[in-house]
Image (tube, one colour):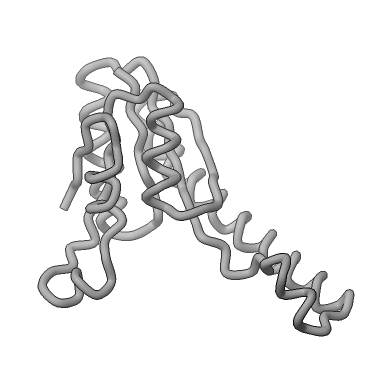
Length: 150
């Protein structure tokens, strides 16, 4: 069994980590990969530079912010890795930039994963309608089993 675990540092993600440790340890999973997918707040679209007068300092500042964001994500993944290693479970890691649900579903399909484990944000009612839900979108797009942990 190949498990893809989505981590984002939220309380629901922490619960998903605990559940994945139980599942991976209990079934001796062949592979566990921890993935974090983010939509960068600091990448400038190519057309922006045509319309806005950006200086080298502006571009360098955006590049530093983007790199800082990646480093924060790497730290988040490493914290999750440590939890698995404390239980004697080896894991792989992936850090991807893109639309979270689409990227997770694509990564799982291309990697031949048999299960995705993802935390639920627990949004309900009108909030869920207005904001959408990565876990719900992954459920709809994934070609493998999805376990949503509350």
